[in-house]
Length: 108
Image 1 (cartoon, rainbow, N blue to C red):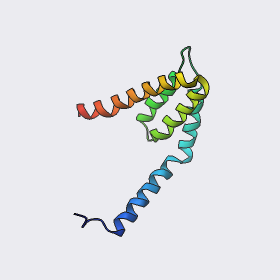
Image 2: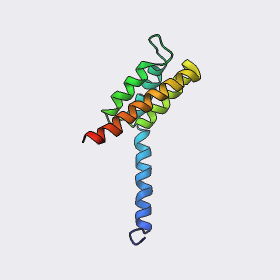
Image 3: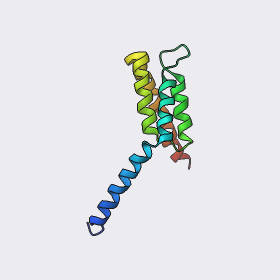
């Protein structure tokens, strides 16, 4: 059952994990996180930021890691709009993520 697992494969998995986290903290991605934080503080008239949803949609089509954008924009929405705005934006982003990942795999 465990014949394929040895110390070499465990070390390779650790290297892959470190490489993934180093990808999250690249200079270009950090600039994108700052931009998403600033956009999450702007609203048009509601209780949450539409721009943070649009920046998440833009990150779907690019190579920016989504985890950083989602966390930073949730923090920005919490600071600007409070708990109610955070719950609304969390619901909208989870719907967008569900729609993108689940329905995309069903169509293909």
